Image (cartoon, rainbow, N blue to C red; front, side):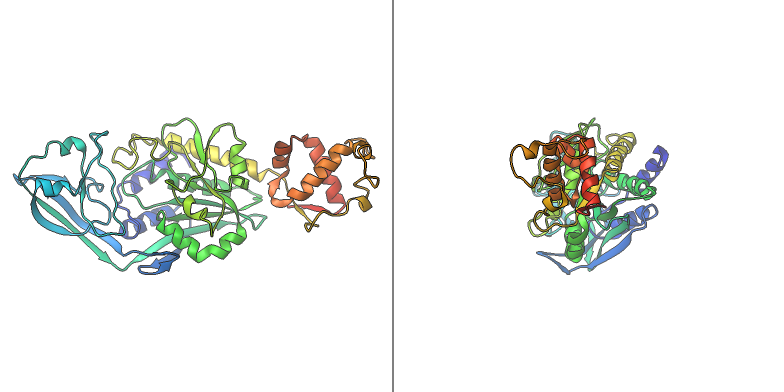
Length: 433
């Protein structure tokens, strides 16, 4: 995809008032479906998903605030961040002190309207720029918020690109915030681009599962429905978030395991900043790494949430998020996926305990320091190196460690590694995947 295509998709998505359920989310998902043919998985309001319940669907008709002199000083129709997401309806006149209990502002960014939600507890309120907040005078203000709650549907998009192996790499992002750019739209934009790049790979080694959902409740719902399938197929994966900001380097948050196939891929890149896993903050990787799920999913970002002041405000817009940075993020991630695709993986054909190498003339029959250091018959590898790497390769050949991983981890020469692999494969002890 080129810069103009990215820009058009962004401009179509940015104004939509999205939330975790509702018209705005469905409209946005349909826009993205023009580029990724997602299968839609639906969950009804009230449906139990692990320890959670799918909430009601929320919609808003209008939301505004009249000053004491009857001027409209806040209007949802001017910026959809002005009304807190899932705000209850209200029509009331009140004094400034009472009003301020329901006004949310951010002192460090005077011109920013903060993004506020109250999904699971009825409340009402407005987001207001601090510059405007300071100008509010004593008097009676008229509050009008006309919103509705009804039983609805939570939708999750899923699309799998199959490869030679059934083992899957998960690529996930979220779609539930209203008009914000880096935090909300950079992930879906990168996902669209990655989908088409991976689809164009003629001989994919791995299968790739693309998932888009409302953050937190959407991934919880999805995992609750697909748990067995995910645990059977997923080797690792990434959650895409905040990929369009000004930071020079991409930043990868490790899975809780910190040693998955994807963790190693990103850790081995000198161009990637590595963050340790934490369940505090972040995105849907928290759900995938929960103790009963443990799917070893990392997270990739650029200008990371909570590390830039514009986060969750109206200033996270197209001026902050650059399309060029989105494209660069996608290209860097795809380069690593290409590296993964080009790696060599083996499976141990005798995986239960160590196979008996001696009767295959692959291990000295006389066990001593001297025999373990003898040259092998072909004089290409000394006996010690052959014995060492043959044991390593047999032990790690579970389809998740590549030959390249093992060369890096154990500081083995690649020529030696390939030679050992060929001998073990010839003796039907391992098989290339």
